[in-house]
Length: 80
Image 1 (cartoon, rainbow, N blue to C red):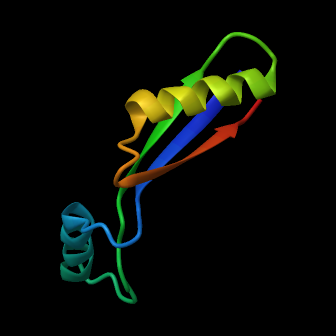
Image 2 (cartoon, rainbow, N blue to C red):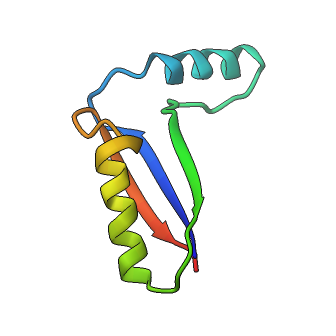
C-alpha cells in the first residue's frame, strides 16, 4: 500500500525558509507571489491492503517522528 504524509507548519508559526524562497522567486522575476510556506512530503510504501490499518500506523508515525506536532500539522493520504 502506498501513502503520502504531508507535514506543514501551523498558521502563525514563523517560516524563515518560506520567506527566503519567496524572496528568491521575486528576485528571479516570478510575479504574483503573495507568500510561500514550505513543508515536507514523505512517500511511504507499506505491506498489506487494510487502508484503515495503514492510515492508523502512519498517523502514529507522524505523531512520534515525522512531525513536531507542537508547531506542525500533518495530513495522511492512503493512495492505494
